[in-house]
Each structure stands twice: as C-alpha cells, then as structure tokens.
Image (cartoon, rainbow, N blue to C red; front, side, top):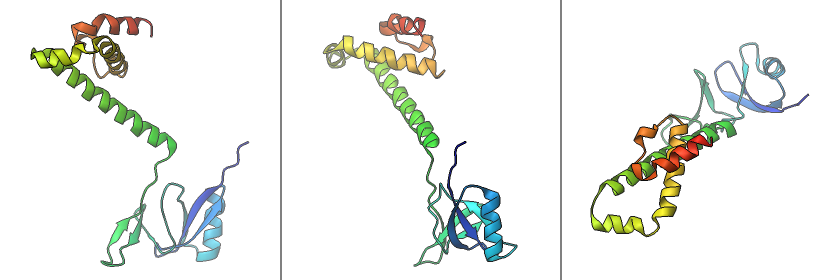
Length: 162
C-alpha cells in the first residue's frame, strides 16, 4: 500500500492560514487543525498552491495581501504532472495545426520563390508534414479530405499502419 504525505494549510475561523503541516489524510489533518485552532477551523490541502502563513482562504481560493496596496492577490496555482502534460499536448496540437496551415498556404501559392523554397528538400518536408497530418487526423482535428494531394498517399499509408 502506497503511503503519501500531503501538505495542508491550517486555516482559522477567520479564513487566515495559521500554519502548514504534513499529514497523510484529510480526517487527521482536520482533527489536528480543529484541536489547535478551534472547532470552526479547517485543513485544506495545498500541494498545488504556493501558500504562506498569513494568507487568506476565501470561497475556496487562497489569497496573499499585496503589501503596497493591501489588495488580495490570488496565490499561485502549481499544476501537477498530469495537468502539465495535458497542456503540453494542447500546445503541440496548436503548433501542428499552425504548421499545417502554413504548409497549405505554401503549396497553394504558385509564386516561384515559394515553390523553389519548398523544392530544396521537399521529400523530407512532405514526410514530416505527413506525420503532422497523421497526428491531426488521429486527434480528430482534421480528416483525410483536409490533406493536400501531394502527401495524401503518404498520410493514408501512415493511417493504414496505425
């Protein structure tokens, strides 16, 4: 059985973080917090929040006080590995879409300069573009009908080997 330590903010009845503690479960963290700071206090897990003693907990969000203005500023949220991976996946997808759009503009433009630029290493470029279109089709962002004719056979081959 895995045993994980979690970090908890001990929050008093006024919503002020009085302390931080390490505990493996909510029930125990909350019991210790109530014994220490009173029955109206509570423990809130802060593994993903940059929270300090003296910060405020208001409606489920941690705030720090700006020393110059006295304003409440939301404390920094630190995404976990799964959330970061999901964001990276979305970023990669955005880049793939942008590259596909540029590729389509370049092959659709008959300007000799653009054609000459593409022909420098067109085989390597088409192979890479086929992989990008394959990924976008796999993510259900594009369909085979969106693939330019110049690389459609290569994308179809990649899809058939999926």
